[in-house]
Image 1: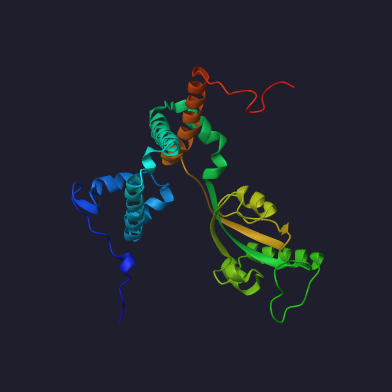
Image 2 (image 1 turned 90 degrees about the vertical axis):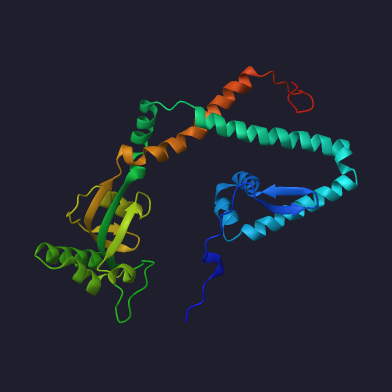
Length: 279
């Protein structure tokens, strides 16, 4: 017998002009609520539209209730309120303007392609298997019934295992039987796909220099000696990652546009108040 998780159920879709929240004389339609959710940080939006919809509505209700009470108390007529309201309105308008500028900035082919070439390593990945031979001082624990071996002994064992593989021994079977990396040993030494920087430097350097089917010489790390077999070495093409590249570049270009606008604006900071006056 299974019990459905209520948070896993899809939330109902209603017409955009349907009033979904009423607080006194204030109403919010589904479309207006959706526009408010759009103003949230991206990582909160899915929750506010899904399983956290009711909790988000409760927060909206709290705000509207307090806002109405504030009007009753005439807090909205105070100089403090006016100053904060003006700034918050400016801040909201600034955010919407920055987003629009980001959508409008020109991204030519050369700029996007240069960014791709400069960051090509980020779009490279390798799938590999390995056999780890642990040596004395390794942070990897000694397997039950196994004794500590010196660095020289570990290198000799790794070299011997490599010779067996070159002679036709099955890499996965040897990894299962001999590797001191117990997690990957259960999968025949398979580490799956990984990107630059996800492995220790010596392992990373060796694996990314290899082609599919290559077998490494023993590679030393703080864990011991690794025998690595690369099974796939992939690059995502420019066209595959272009949408992601454009999303990355737009905020930087929008920031440059903002800097240009600021240069053109008549900006004056009181030198004494901000500590800019020459001593």
